[in-house]
Length: 454
Image (cartoon, rainbow, N blue to C red; front, side):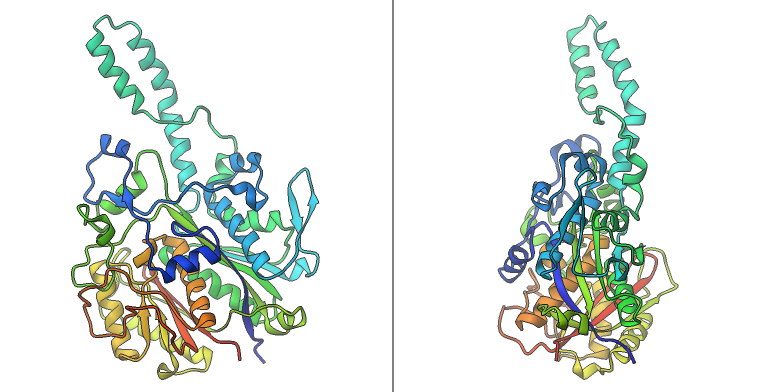
């Protein structure tokens, strides 16, 4: 008999909220965070899109993260750790410091051998790699150029050379933890190390579907009896000094281009959509738990995970297969796994990127499979696209939408591309069952089916 799996803890760090309460409030208020790309980037390259969703400054010390750890860990790991501490607090799972030297904690009320970690990331510690690469290439060249400038008699030429020197950004030293910071699996490994967890520990890399895949596999492990509970989520951090990661998406015209009205540029499912809003990063971690284990300790249950499905388009590394046949197969698999049918679904948290093909294919599938009944929105209309973190953040939104029987609007949706039940106002809705779906480069498709605990 399959064990039931519930969500008992939530943690988020995003551009519009750095904890679950502020994030959820911002979602319901329809808030977004859009700013211009750093002026310095424009010295290196012209961009088609010149807007992004930036993370604010984050005080990691409030998550019991030391200054030394901030130097030894990539931001992707720091974001994951911050969300994990939040999720434990949300789940009312007390933790205590057990190794002061290593700043390591334990969760004494549970069996650490039955506590797993499942995290997703699309790119991992690429920010650290970019920083390390810039040091390796530029450090000695900057010294040489500086020496030349000191010997130039013409002040005008010297000033121009100095301007070039200023644009050669790199760290003051090479970080000796560069390898461990860059590893994609560091986000999962560091959670296991921080909390002394010796259950299954895995990292999933499925591009923009990574967070959903991670939660799905965590769900399956707990349901199968391999674990009693797990951290499951996704994380991404996409900043570099030169805008190189941003440029990678910009050159293929994947990003929204409403530079004149940045606040209106990001518009999933609108006929005037032009692409997705690039997000600097974010993270979400859920505590998922076997039902009886949760009930015995009196945990709050936000929602129950009922089923999971995944497929691959087998079509193109960057483009979705336009008929949506593989996505429909995935949804039917997941609904069967959950013991539900199409008419049981009340809400769909869509992938909803705002790119032309994604939205066209996704709405085609929704219309064919579900019709006009379920509510549908795009969390990316508020946050932009956090890549590997997006599916986990959207799983948090889906759980909260079920728990509170309300959900956020699809922002900037003025001219819907199809006559579907898009959320245009925050209201009380009878949300009992929902799906949260993600699609990623490489043809990865993944979906979670959730329901109210009953």
